[in-house]
Image 1 (cartoon, helix red, strand yellow):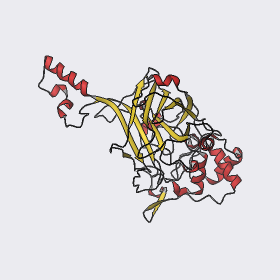
Image 2: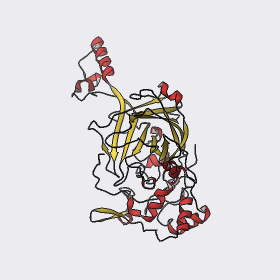
Image 3: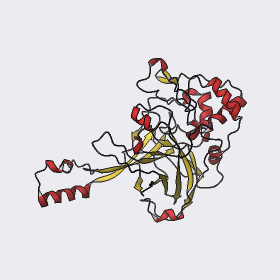
Image 4: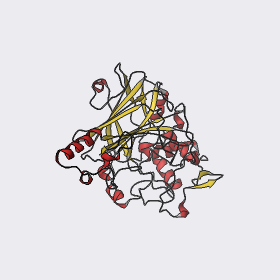
Length: 397
């Protein structure tokens, strides 16, 4: 499999969802061609939809006052997700509620699109060491398929056809000639914003343009919500999805609330089962042991001085916010973050943060988290902390 170079490590933080994660998604075997599947394809009549919760990403406060005001008290969103496969390809459909349709316009910086993404781990042989959600992490590569709702963009064929990008008012055409020009522009316009990326940590996202990616994605608005689909090869240069179960993560963006980049809703790694009873499903969907109340006290003693724990707490510049960590981080990721803080190192608070609050130091060119190692904690106390952090997540809308 291909591997990209990453010049940085990815940050060590904590995450959590609840005592028990959403259950696995059952992938249904079909005999249908899945090369180009959309949200209105008949194949979904045979699919099994599962309810999955997406939580607002609050690890790092966004550097946008208006966007922060719009998302001051974000709620989690419930989506319906299904998967089908035929041995050569696998397809996913995600349906989520949204009362407004938001489109990204070319040439504008004040429009934000609704959209979704589906993410895969290149190596999932060890469920306890899955990549960091969203961007992957050093040595733990991810592939992300992104689809947004956009207006038609012209010159979609790469042939340098700038004539059809000209504003109609700036042409020398009138009457029937102008009508013919507009018709031609509409016929060649490309309104499909589909991108595929490979990433191995923050700032390492690279669009796949070498022809090795064979995916097909579509999105459609129904009046009270969105339906998005992705179909892709089960094996390519980056991932091999031939397994009893595969970890998949989903994200959605709400353009009405200025969603983009890190301002989105996320699931944790979710097990998609091609066969029942996999170890991956047990690892991702199991109950978290530990005493929650004791964990809450331990977090107050060991974590609260550097992390914002609940939305009612004052924001901290010392480390990432943990207010929704239970929603999109597995118990194993939380545990690793405490025992090996430098395994995943986030880039930092934001560009306006004071230099005294750096989240990492550079040592021999590598990012080393300023968070101390908590591997000295007794096993029972660590279990309690993880159990409590897994309860930190927003209410569902």
